Amino acid sequence: MSIDLTHMRKGTELLKRGFAKMQEGGVIMDVVTPEQAHIAEDAGATSVMALERVPADIRADGGVARMSHPDLINGIIETTTIPVMAKARIGHDEEARVLEALGVDMVDESEVLTPADPFYHIAKNDFTIPFVCGCTNLGEAVRRVVEGAAMIRTKGEAGTGNVVAAVQHARVVAAEIDLVQRSSSQEFETIAATISNGFRRLEEASEHMLNVVDTPFGSLNDVHTSVLEVLGEVREMGRLPVVTFSAGGIATPADAALLMRHGMDGVFVGSGIFKSENPVTTAEAIVMATHHFEDAGKIAEASAMMAGRAMDGLEIETLDVRMDQRGW
Image 1 (cartoon, one colour):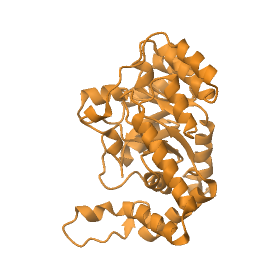
Image 2: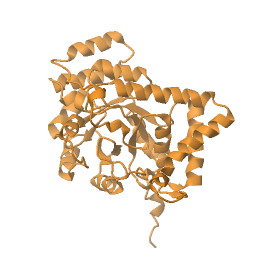
Image 3: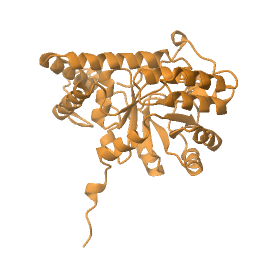
Image 4: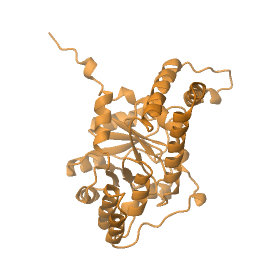
């Protein structure tokens, strides 16, 4: 008699969030070669993000940015002993399926790549593999958790070496969490309804009186129920119910420590390491500052470790493309 394994096809929420929990307190580094993966691992990174170009180069090159080539991802998987993540475009279920088949440990549904779906993100609950997603505010974060994200990161503005957007997003999320905690029952319902309306974007594109009833994540009624549940967890815990990292523009040990002091559970660093003058010492210094963010002496020591300049930064106001505005 054959054994029915269909109930085991999808990873449980507990397993997915458990993997994310293992990253807590750490640094996840973007790498484009096996050699860079070795540098990240030796520096103490908890995971690496395999991609063809760091965000600064994606920004400079322009055009459509897609999932990295499988050969590149496999080469990095084979060369490192720490977990390997990779990016898929927002709403591109098939890129995510390819990454899952390749055996990466987590998918980043990333605004750094060119979005594929203007209305919906990936239905992450349909996958065995865990996902991380970006946010600029509490509403985005709650919607991504409802869709199945096991980890959230504030978006920042990738590839700029400028931490101001990351700080903005961290402050907005924290302020809105405080608002939820102080809300009356009626105000709580209003906040939840506003968040749920983010799943109705398809209506805005129609010339007709379109009324969205179903989404890739279930009926709109079921989605709203899930929004209420996640928002209730936020009110009870005083934070998001999943591990929350910061990303986008972190380029120095002090940047990493700053975001940790804003309540982040860890940091993603991309261009900030491998666009610096000395990636080896920069990687080691950022890991040290992240681990000891409450100790100013250690942060000073980490800053002094950097041999050479940090990456050149960009003013946010001068950008032609705001990656942090991608996603809904």
